[in-house]
Image 1 (cartoon, each protein chain N blue to C red):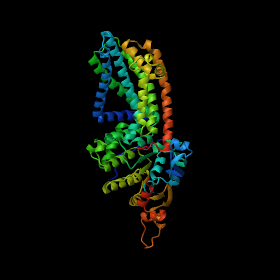
Image 2 (cartoon, rainbow over the protein chains, first blue to last red):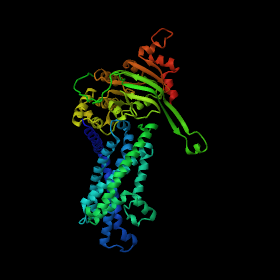
Image 3 (cartoon, chains in turn cyan, brown):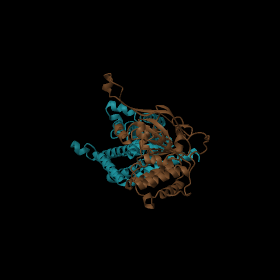
Image 4 (spheres, rainbow over the protein chains, first blue to last red):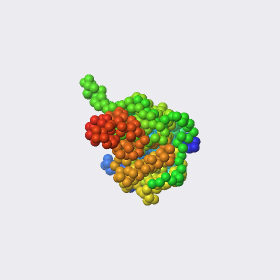
Length: 278
Length: 296
């Protein structure tokens, strides 16, 4: 058996296990999906209420449709990114909760393989989840996607996911070091990304401190890129600087995340925090 | 439960060559201390850096030969599980070294992981997943082929007394005894040459306990594995182990075969001492007393 075969099998172990968990927790998956759909619809409905909120026909029908699309893309992309980030950063807290953490860390699996397996699952899971939410939003709001370039949007999503995976791996160190509160700390990271990345408002329109912070968030560029592809129909040729930037960011952040995690793992082994109860 | 030839085992040693004289496990002067840092304000006021320091393992040395069933006997809270965690690469030692078939648990962590597996007192599974789903995950992590692993899982679980339905039932619906058997199957599946058993029979009914003990013997007798077993059950230690180390407060207080240990403590009434008598004589307290005293 070659090392490559062994690593592939180990990578698949994490994908298969997570798929099995989704199947076994199907009831929870339905609830989660309904929550996501309701949440996304609530955000997009804001656009429908602008005129009544200001008490005047401030926006024309075409402008309202534009806002619908703007918010819908923000809600969908954020949902996808949140799922990817959460699945990757949850890889430790879930194992600790189930009590399997010691067995996974005792197995002859390179941490990179562990993370690649978890990340692959998160990308596919996030994509399927988002596609379902998109379908519901498209049906409810009759989205005009006639100009959308789905190929370039998907490409931005995939390349942008690399950075999210890297940040997720860094985030996963929190439950490793802080068994009781680590998961909640991950939500803080997620909320910070949501706040500064121009998800529901253009990053340039935000107050200056937030606008400055948005420059350093890869999510800003992912959302801008996908909006350009889905709303303005921009193709790969127009988006290549964004794609290149996101790719390079991902290539830098993933090893940085793995390094941070490795340091966390060493610390956990020194202090005994790998125990199932911490 | 009888040994059959239906289960083929992968070779975890692969192309690794090990000198025949290399012991299965060599522990030299290993120690582990756990500390809790004092609060920021305590430290600012010049208080101690650590609020609590617990010496879990205190300069322990052991040499375990191949195909030996070695027992580490002692009450709860005396460092047995910490010792197992040090051997299974889940903790790094503060001092000393642990070598598995010549490989250092810190320096050669990956090779060590290929050679060992562990069964702990808690079965530790994904509760909603079935034994098959849990074990196939474990098998793939160790690089086993999926189809082959599925066949082996069925064979091992059936031999341990699980029926077809149980193999696909969520773990949460199974009794503790059944869960522990699945835990043993998980370890056995990867063909470890060193099997670390951390109180594997605690909380099991007498029937399940006997089955697990029979399986431990079989792992050594049929599959040539070396077994390190921690327990606070004196009868179990006597029944299973070739040699026993009695530990108390993180230290080995005596080491030898069960009969050698008993010879250390001549009884005034002339009867043969039990291991409980030996423990009492060497530590000045019974296992129950030691457990109560060591409770935080």
